[in-house]
Image (tube, rainbow, N blue to C red; front, side, top):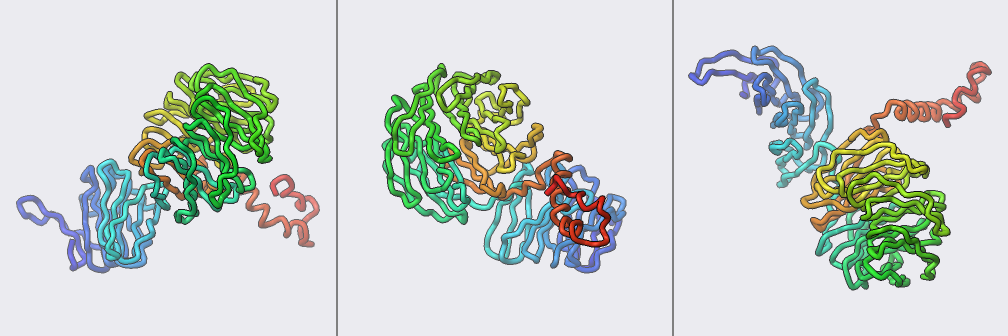
Length: 468
């Protein structure tokens, strides 16, 4: 690669094989694809050019706003990364499509490199930093401060606070921007589960000390719920905020009033109960147990049905926002989706270790699962793996969506909570869902025109009925 605007190919003996001409300015970088069939060149003319070995220009990658200094292929040869003085790294497909722009450096980016597995990109910049990026699921922030494993994480319903629980016996409250707000201290042993009341004014924490504690967002201990005879792993508020359900190693789920009165005890599981969740209408409680089952209960404590199918203990459970589906997370490496009637709809397979956490997106179209394999995976309702979020260095136990569905928080034994930026519209692969979203958006734009414009025929005025 040369400032004379050309790339030259040479034999090992020093013979000039051919000259690749086409760049309009200095060429700073050049690299072969892993299979040796394509050459990529980076130039001050703001482009990356792809060439065949015979010297044919295959395509020009355009989009950078300043000189391109670095270029590299992913290990599988399917992605090209380019580093530019415009302070960005851009990712391209072999066909020349811009896949992603990695923004964050505050000065020119001089170099870029893929990790051997192709999952991480490193960029070197004049801002004196090296930044590490994932191919997908951009890491927004890492929340550090806990002194031991982090097991539970939850967004407040108003989206303003993140709560995390840890083996360090504390609950920590964080701003979305990552600033630590409060440290809730009082439990005498490890803390597992955490849940916000619907109005975001109460935080419930579940602990190995056999209690559930209720806190204000300012860190004040409101009351302690005592009665379980063994460790408490899961906790959940009813949708109206009036009942708290707790799941325990003592094989029971207990229902409590806000004042701390024990309302009833749900008995029937044959082993430890780890997870508990209310249906959106507050009429059904789902519990997940090491006895390999999910159980559905009425508010009065009647066992409605038992869902069997997992081959190892079930650790997490979540209702879909419309209340028509239940997701369960199991040590058998799978997430299973069930109907309210107890019919197994599908099994989500892909994790390589036990799954502990599961959560639906607010619109009910995406399922997030947290696993000991150090990843969070995002799935469609049809079971398609949409994305894998990698970055934690130890198992991930908890996962939670922000109320707007744009951010995912994950809790890991690596002592951190990580926040991930996702674009749900880009993730959804189901054509019917995409079409429905497009129809609704289009009708929101055009409905006033259809209703009020005098030139619209009467037969067309109601075209958008049912879509907005």
